[in-house]
Length: 323
Image (cartoon, rainbow, N blue to C red; front, side, top):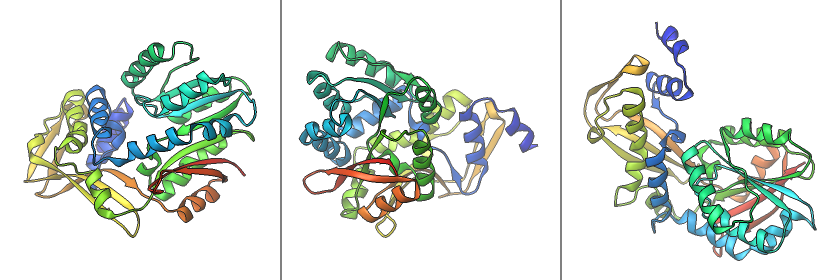
């Protein structure tokens, strides 16, 4: 019966919600935090003093703009600057402004699963950088990258900022990087943000702010299930919980049922039973050291070209190319 229902599900969201909540332990993908409300919540998170990641990467891009631009262009090469998960583009605009003002020959192609985020980004860029050659692309990373790859032979510089790579466990990260590597040519570059290991208290605070913004962001996936899939989650009966393992470098986010309850999700014909204190795993945020990053690159068919860090090396942007 469950297999019949699963086959009848239409969208990827429906399929992943069904499979995740029917599984044990229960899990949901953090990519579904993002809709119009989720995008706004994440922008608030990026502005929180506890969420150091944005500020650290902003510092790197601001302090090393000219060096990064020269690495991208390598002399006077034209290139496509392709950003995976572009969001509001706040940090990327530092590079875009510099590249535009110094007459680098490039085209900016931001990719995001959220059309709402892309529309906002395009609108702001038209105002702030009216001469920028920009083409937004809505969709999943690899499908869209594959489309771009077939267009012409122009060099690609692929951006993956914000330590989004940290949403993947190491085996998944290797598969992700391999998939990107397969779509890279000899001269192409991959620019990836990594949050480095540091004081565990600092990391925990970044994902467990006292104002509850991170909790609201995590719970937004339940809001979406209620709205889009006709669910009846009571958000007050779940609490956000964050853990961090300094040995593995893995920060994990959970939604924890505070009491026994039953949730019906009509659109996908699923009834979900929760025991008291049962969890839904929603996100991981992996932290790294230099050896681990070199290992990831080696396993993925990549090699490190260079890296740029903040003043304390709490965060680093690495540049890779194909081996």
